[in-house]
Image (cartoon, rainbow, N blue to C red; front, side):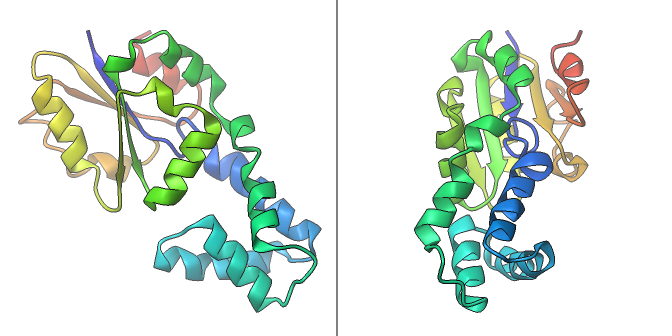
Length: 188
């Protein structure tokens, strides 16, 4: 039986395409423009991006008093479940949990909150959250299951660059572009 490794953002969860648009809209509703939020976003991203830190920076920096950090953060986060990739998740639900892994990049507390709010965490045998490369957890899974195909699904080509495909011929990469990629994951 094949083993599957999925990225979270922009594979299981439509982060860039939908969630961030919702986030910017929430800021616009309290009078903060997209360009202003983007300026703060760039600063916070350098520090290791966490939504609550961005919200606090914008509210303090723009002297916004009509909402609290907690209320605005909750308004942004409570819709996470609406932005899941239901087509892919429905396919994962048909797999054995023991065959599914998640390797995601980001700040641990923020990634865990998004995963928890989407409700997808229970579909995975193990979840790895990395700050840098995904090489170690991906290759550890390949090593553990040398006699089985391991399919690694990510939306960024750079995440495959440092993987040792010669040492792990059982590793197959799938660049997730859109829902057409689902067929490639499952060899259809």
